Length: 211
Length: 345
Image 1 (tube, each protein chain N blue to C red):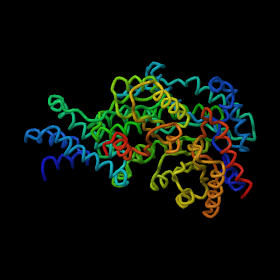
Image 2 (cartoon, rainbow over the protein chains, first blue to last red):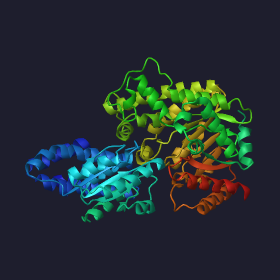
Image 3 (cartoon, rainbow over the protein chains, first blue to last red):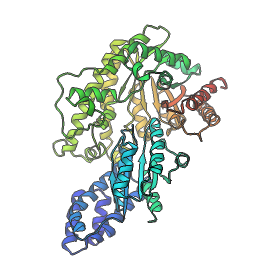
Image 4 (cartoon, one colour):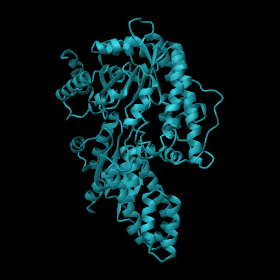
């Protein structure tokens, strides 16, 4: 098994220390940082997402895998920056105003990062103006809005409305969260809806034209 | 209280939502009422009367204990909502009840003046409270499940300290509600689910679930039993069958689960003197595609399946039914739709 294959396996299994050591070994062996991301880390997280969708693993295993990937990325990032390599796609994400829940949103962040998106995480209780300002600053291809509470769904409606009417650069809007449905997404003018973090990757890639 | 009381309610075909939030927000000044014990108590009674039940459920608010604990730990009030601990705080010298908690206790005392209703208290479960105190509670839970101890990993150490503080504040608040006259309490433990606890990991290490969910609950159960107060256990999270099996051992008068569970199948796991309550998908009541007619059909189907299962059952909501601005009438209409089911059976 090659070092990159071992690294991929270590990330999938959530072995953070092994992932760090194998990343260093891959660099020492002369692997290009971009190849380590594209050939080991991204496939590892894609497999994690697929296993999640098949109910073979659960949220904790996803987070542990992401933790291992983060260890690898901490080593790689200086090399990637030095080589001028940046993710092709940027996404802004946040939980809408009035809602303090972040578990679901954090999982989507993990999976989008795993798919090599640059993710700007605005956190929870995010007012519409903050989304607009982040869109203007970061020029993302995608914005993700999360809500856990039925009581904060109206804030999602308002956020989409303000993004659409604010005159900020065109951006795809994707929504999700426990009470959200495809029909609700359609009603409020969102471009996409994902029922869980695993399918959020597929939907995001489709929306930005990467699929 | 006599367990037969609850069994008689089930046998009589009681149907009811946990609907205090819905009724409270029909008033012009819900925030003011929530801080006024007597008025809050009146709303709790109004809710019980509106839905024809002697079970006076309180306003379900899972933020109260976190607020009280953080204030006791010296966190400024303005930072409470977003605060997460990154290092283990010392045990506070004393934990004061917040104005909202005091109002809830006064509401219980107000309800207790009525002999025809059961004043019910409420608290978040210790594990669920713990998850609200950490930015990422899932990773340390998983690490603990891998066998890492507090001495080996700082995240596990933080988890364990916060769990013990959570238990402290929950017991403190429960005692206050019991002193105010609560004859039953609903413990809400929605984070004890397969998002926070991996079924894959629990299959090889079930001791983790026992240690961080069941043992704190068992200590609460003993405290309630010593006070003659009944337990209503609520967990609307997504559960495994093993989790349901374990919750069934708590000796609850009522078990309340989310709509992901098939209660007619869970009936086989639950003692015959424990009522199953629920579990219509009320979190989706604000969605227009779920029509009142569909709610009525789901309710009818659930009632029929529970009758076939032969288990004591109260038809109701999967959680408290929240009032959503602009959707109040639609949501109430769907609650009324399942309440009508009572007359068909």
